[in-house]
Amino acid sequence: MIREVLRMGDERLLQRAAVVESFGTPELAALLQDMRDTMAQLNGAGLAAPQIGVGLRVVIFGVKANPRYPEAEEVPDTVLINPVLQPLADEVEEDWEGCLSVPGMRGLVPRWHRLRYSGFDEQGRAFERSVSGFHARVVQHECDHLDGILYPMRIRDLSKFGFNDALFPGRELPPED
Image (cartoon, rainbow, N blue to C red; front, side, top):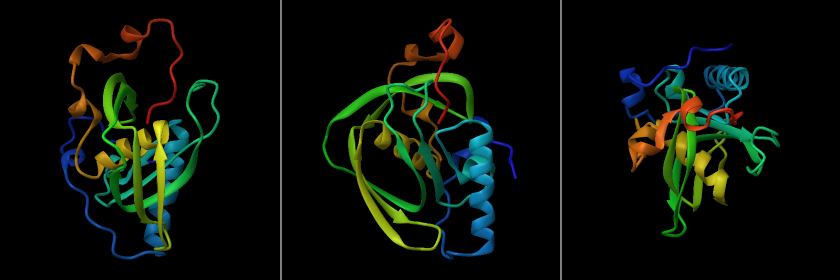
């Protein structure tokens, strides 16, 4: 089922999400299906449960080759529950981000370039990955939602934050995260 995505200003987006304690349940499966349906309908790169009003530490993300995102490498479809992120270097890169909860806008956001993330899949199996670049950016963006952080809170220079059509006139933009 496609769910409504909360927009910046809704206080539920500012709350810290609760740890998932039960895996492999019908409720978790239904939540993940709703998240997948919602993300696909809106052509997003990822979605966090708090964005649809569910205060649990659950994110999904994935990016296939997309002509609207020609520079981005593919990111495997991933369910990440109770994530832990660890930077693998001090290197930080700034790049443009959008968000389904901040529609029509983009901002230049600093993120770790390389990191390791770990957590659980929907069945409770532990896994970890070491990633860099766009993949690392997507994971950080989505996991920020679990701690009540929206990407505009991370922008260092607000002159690099604005409406898509003003920042990039005449350009077709990639889907929002």
